[in-house]
Length: 155
Image 1 (cartoon, rainbow, N blue to C red):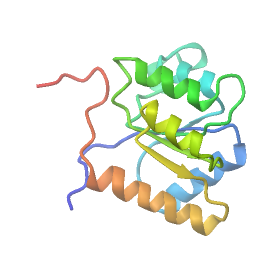
Image 2: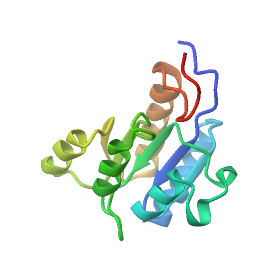
Image 3: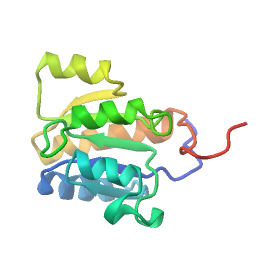
Image 4: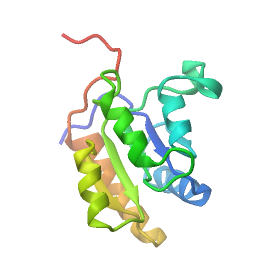
């Protein structure tokens, strides 16, 4: 397998600060060199993606090549944010992996109906998280061909 030749920014939207910190730690331990950014809810996610508010300078909010999205967040939940992302011609090609504690069939179906690329139930142990993040890294950064970042010239 040939890895992607470009660095892909990972953006995680999760209201749990411990989950964000643990994911960052696991990514660094997994030797993934991807830049990793986090936001705490759906409002911040959408602001980040549109470079608004505290994310206005694009250097502070590089366009992600992959979004890890929790469903149950305050202000704007992951379902609303996912619907908004997939309704945007500018953002819809960004793969969104739902990572949530929900195991409800309704959430699985709705996430895929809204355009999620994958649905993963959050692991509960550090060892499980390490495995999940390793698989995510291998799949999204070594196996699949990702589209160029939004706004990049297409052939």
